[in-house]
Length: 194
Image (cartoon, rainbow, N blue to C red; front, side):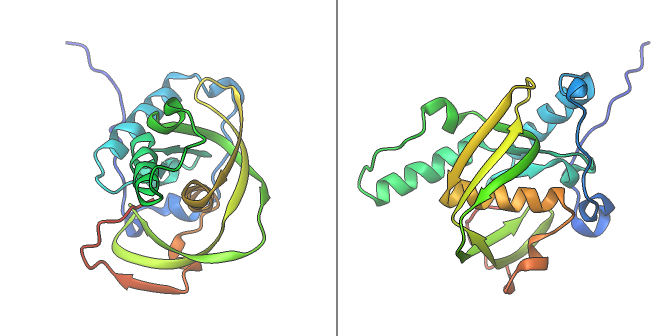
């Protein structure tokens, strides 16, 4: 009988996860295609796909203090479709692949942010049952590497910019409740968790 050594990742609650309060380490570029990182990314995508209202997941949320997060392509697609329906069919600037595929960001850095901030409704898969209003900018430019080690430069506005800021906070050991102007209990709202 062969025994396989593997880690089964899960989303850990904040009160049981000290990694959420650490500044995450960069992943060496040579390690991006390693089996450990590939397994972690695959597991994070699976975990995120099981979350009805989850839109993104950072590695520290599963106990790995490294600079990596995944954005759910299906969550972005659903949000985009709802916005287009609300705006009566406004044209999308994103290609279908960008919207429907999960997006992986490794060693991300924010290059630019717009100035003014607005309060955004926010939750977190590591802090279930709570919501908050967090001041966030409307536009962000982020550079990172994808899961193949290719450089990525991504400008984002609105919902995606909001997600980027939330996930970058996770990589800096910051939780949304640290920045929230108001925190309140979940009232069975069907909204997104990041």
